[in-house]
Length: 121
Image (cartoon, rainbow, N blue to C red; front, side):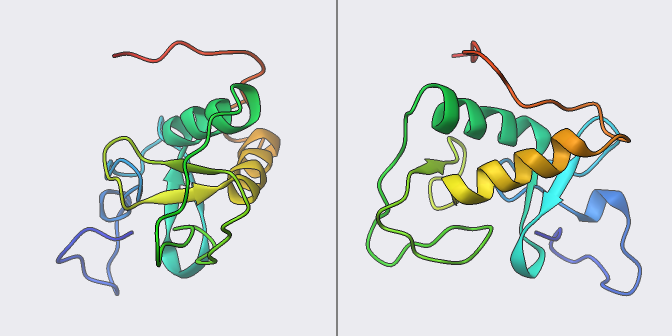
């Protein structure tokens, strides 16, 4: 997503926000872009991947909802819902695809979680 009021002809890193936590893109917060400018940051991706691929915890889609990243309603797929913005969700396919992209990027220090992670309460 883009920061409200940003100039599309003169964008900076601070103008790109993660759809799931609304934090800006930075060197220590890598992003993966979905369709139509939707973005998920590495921190949110870590939580989503751990919930969906390690803990097998998912949320159900509500009427009229679709994945924020691919824009597709996938009622039979597992989904991760942002703990900060409950109308923002990612399907397991997009989470796994985004994790693969960041994991393979040699310029980014991000790896797929391979075990349970502790999350702050």
